[in-house]
Image (cartoon, rainbow, N blue to C red; front, side, top):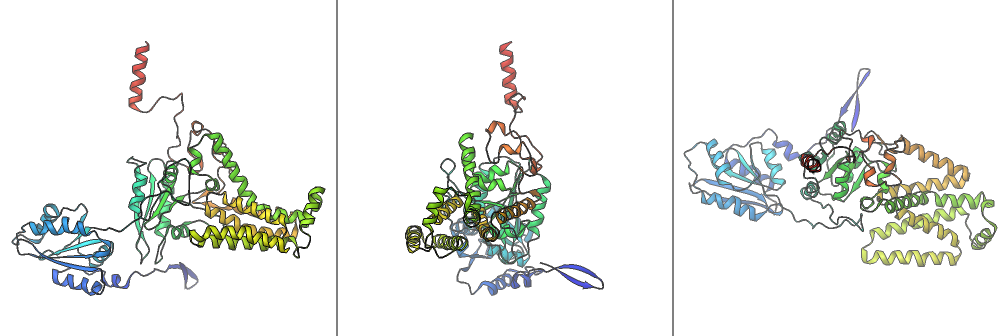
Length: 537
């Protein structure tokens, strides 16, 4: 975090650096010398760990060698078949120099595909901690780093947070290599790029950002890299850490980065010109830049016909707005403008509120708070208990509150519709933002009535208009308006109408679909057209 240091009359920013592991810091600028000293230094660091192993072997040329690995994160079969077995079967001439021995080991002995050498002890220790097996040979100064990393991982399954009826059933897991494979299998093109780095001075988490070269705006890629490089923290345990460090406005309740567990969603955004960020150990991928319209859209919208997809989108948008303003609108009408209620309906409301000891504002506020507590308890409880808890909370507690006269039946109905409306939002983090905005909007409406409701909505609208995600206005393509982009916002036009990629991304290749009257760019298609033209003539 930047701080300032006084130097005369000027203030110079000084960046505080988060220190790495003290042991690794002490090993910097320390190089390996010989087999016994290097083995002893490594044993001094890891000798007390129960999963630390040293395997002594002797090559056919009576040359001593040591194999060092951490048992819990390595593939023992690969060590046995691709390291120990070829070493014990190959005769290494001790009369050749160390460089020649290193060349022979690399090119003729080791069967493993991922092998490199290193002399700096701090990098050797880091490689050991990342699952590499160390091979030290007498007379060879370099240490062979053999990537034998292996960990148990869960199988690929459909994401629980993004269920679809029509669409792929695979989802990301906590392994970044498997997640990259899921994306690359859908993008078998050489332009698909995956850039990796390590973030977190202690966790050394692998972070990768993906994009399609030739489509994405290079300035966006550079901005993503710059923001990731600026992260200086001791731990990165999930993609949520990265999101909080790279977002434009961390004080906003609205998310400015889209997260997803679905590979098809990531691929769909990559081909539009966005960048995806993945973190090893997290099943979520971050997509930047993100706009408001992305948070009520799903991948299933593009798998269905455009009429059904457009209708479902509008229902989601109405439910989203309904969940924000319905409690406040109810309080405003009931407390300040009862003349707007029809007479027959006013009699029903009055009879239902008879005996309720609280004003409408307090009644709705307490019920909203109770619903949030119940919702949070349902989420945190085990699945076997959570379903029963939700039924008990909604039916038993709600009915008991109405029977006891604490709340009116119409209030329960309004809050139930509001809660169901918030569940219709596909993005969980966006739904949370709208749920949290209901409370200040409810308070200002309870004080000023309709005037307070309009004032609060204007404040929310101005705040959303001021947001940006990696330089892209949050309400694009609505504000600033783009007629071509409006085809894929509240409604989804037919796919053959969506000819261009979003203009607010400033991509290098804007064209997405070839118009019907333009010549094909595929050489094979050109040849077929020429052949058909010749046959007709």
